[in-house]
Length: 245
Image (tube, rainbow, N blue to C red):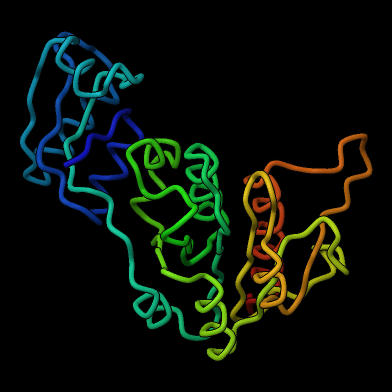
């Protein structure tokens, strides 16, 4: 079991129903209208509600900022890549991450991918952060809506996706074309590298295109979550534009 803290994150966990919510602790004596609505939502869904002193919630949340609510839930589940492809056979947008180890970066990437309308995030089993409680918290509810796939070998997974008619776009500061010159229509995977070293050479070779984000300012590199966000939203913009009105 894990805990989720904060009004927004708990609300998203209840509404999405991707994993069981065992019960929800509310801080005794709070008068926040949002908490009152959350209590009503729990009762509508048949989720047990417990009213406890602040010290209990502090202990459950390990003194994280809980806003007066802590939910006890089943552990975050990884999705199978075949299930993702079955649900999105013709126009899937995936984000693959090559060794992102910072939990806050991974959480931010999952949140950004969800906001941009991606269909899944793919992470490797090794040399990568996983769906820890810290990542779930940093994702601010996005884990409850966006599938996260964990694979044994990311390079082999990209090969499989290429055979399934996916175009692979790798983010690299030395890429041959700007990100806004790429065509993100149809099935595509955006691959972002680790915080320290970027994409491994093997994964670069698996990409159909290496794309860069031009940075005319005095700093030429971006945080991985920022860089991936820029490209994801460009892909989202193109895909919305191509849809019939």
